Length: 439
Image 1 (spheres, rainbow, N blue to C red):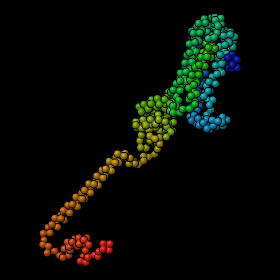
Image 2 (image 1 turned 90 degrees about the horizontal axis):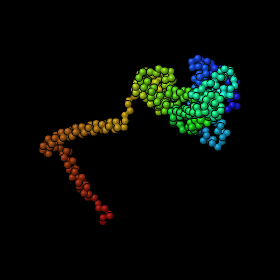
Image 3 (image 1 turned 90 degrees about the vertical axis):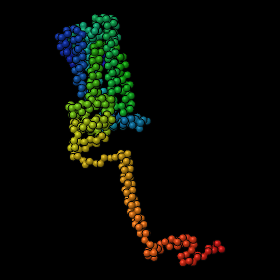
Image 4 (image 1 turned 30 degrees about the vertical axis):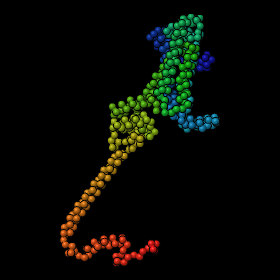
């Protein structure tokens, strides 16, 4: 560790200068030789570094989400070229280039923070050995060696012997207890930070090896912190515990206000946003407009949580606009259907409402009933006409038959002729010759 720290000795002077400046401020409040003055100086150094690293943190979030989006394509490449590692690497690099992502972007905050970490370790190691370093002179060195945090000197380690600890003016028990508690807190904060990332801010619809890798790191990192932590001075443990707490709080803020699409955090965020927008009738903050704008731009590619959000706005009589604002649903406003299609302009002509199968069947039954009733009416009217005709014929039948013309009496005789024809006789009285087969 000393060799690694010496490699970053070029940044030791700036780090020691920042610590001394914070110490001069806190020394006036708590006293220059107290652990509070030196401990808060280290905490303030962490906060200053992490504020400067916020742009890199934002870039890390974007890179992580871009990598999550590319996971299905990466899995296809791995399966297609599983026997050709060189071609697989080439296709991966081509995919990164086309999408504009960089796998190393997710490690930028850690890489950028490591020089400050090793420089601080180098400064505290100099305090432990009693040598001046950077801008820390003899008087500041004596003051730092007197500073204790809960009975443990800043430069003491868990692995130090009793003689070295006594030289720093402390007991071995106090050093072991304080360092053990800080190592446990450091590992627990790292585990919780990684766990909330995996359980709340990961797209659960995509199952890829990347997720399995992140899940493995959730257990590996705390073990690594515990192993290396026993060799860290108390001041470095303060630094690392502070940066873990900062990372945890920063990540909680991002998960709550800018969650990953498709994650449980997004479902909770859109539920809160729905209540807020339906209550106020508009989006007030810039972050809300950014989220709504991204959802509108997706169209049919929205996930189930985003579709539920759009449907909830529609039920409330609101419409999400393309610029991220929300307006009341009017004929001239932007109208959005539930399937994600956005239409603008004047109101369209209303189409007839589509009937269900049961409604169509009931309509057909009703039409058939109307037709049957009409047929019944027609048949009834024909029966009435027939009955009237029958009555007329009966009235006419009362006349003597002799008064009827001969032409009208012919059909009566025709029936007899038909019966005679059926019996094998012709109308003229001649009989048909018998069939030859009957002779």
